[in-house]
Image (cartoon, rainbow, N blue to C red; front, side):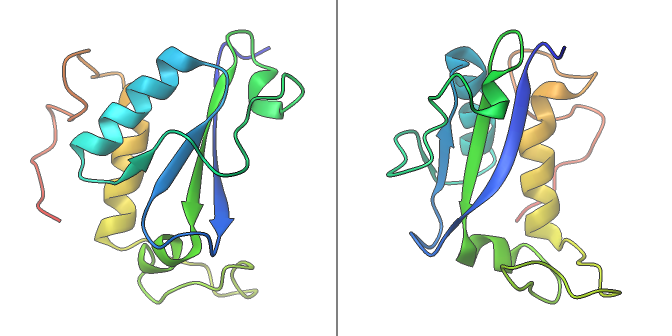
Length: 131
């Protein structure tokens, strides 16, 4: 069994740029939010739907529960070099992240890096890139 879990989902056409957070692991949720805010993303901790509060939600089956991130369709589309259909990529046409997409992945995953220092979400081994 896993200690914690993090999932990333599409929220659909509910908003243009806000990333909503949910899940029962409040401490991890706060830390992920802090990393994304530090990276310049707009976070909303009270999603209108898909709150991840059910103990039966797969992210909450982990020992210490989990966190889910809900991304709006417009934000997802601008994270890829050639855009992406919200329903998924066409066969043989794998999507490639652009700088914004890479920045999101780095920020969302900063807590799980072996170099995480606990005081900043930035990886000290990587030079900072501007968005």
